[in-house]
Amino acid sequence: MARDATARLYDVDENKVAFLRPKKLGKYTHGTIRFQARKGKLIDLDKLHESVWATRLSKGTRSGLVALEVTAVGSLSVSNKQTRLDITGSNAHFILGKGKSKQQRLAFEQMTKALLQGNFRRTQTVRVTGTVEGWGGAWPSVLKKLPRKPRRIIVTGFQATP
Image 1 (cartoon, rainbow, N blue to C red):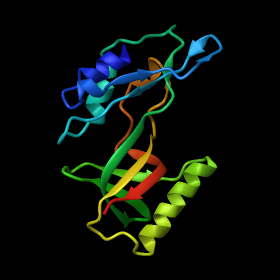
Image 2: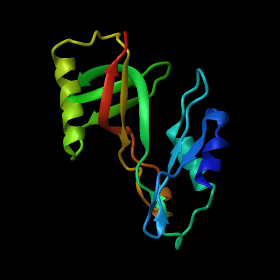
Image 3: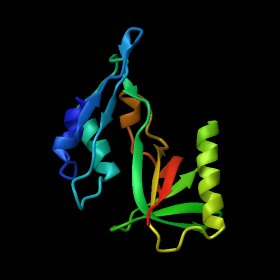
Image 4: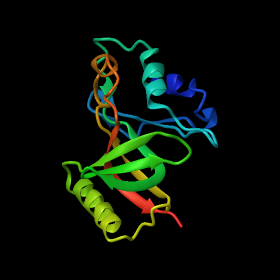
């Protein structure tokens, strides 16, 4: 259902939507929905939320959303002690944060260190991967309200592009 809702988005390449189920865990099967924006488009997280909400997932399904992982491309800046990713081609931006796991802390610290040492030019494009904070929980509670703005990505990886 959520896969179909995602495919209905106008900014999603319908040929690049896949539902992957790596293994069955106990009674429940965990899966990943992987999709990609159409060339030259950005995926609006508010529209994604609305589209998944339209599937009308309700109580009693014992299903939910573990995390929304995104890869965003833009330029980094620091202001008010916050690292910000300004998305290329739009006015959108994310606040970047450090997570609880060792991998998340290490990825964020490496990115911050590289930024503070001047390893990124102000105009250089950076690709950041991470999970969007506030996108997780059981249905329908995760769909009751949009996560707060500005969106915050818990960094799991980054890469500077030439």
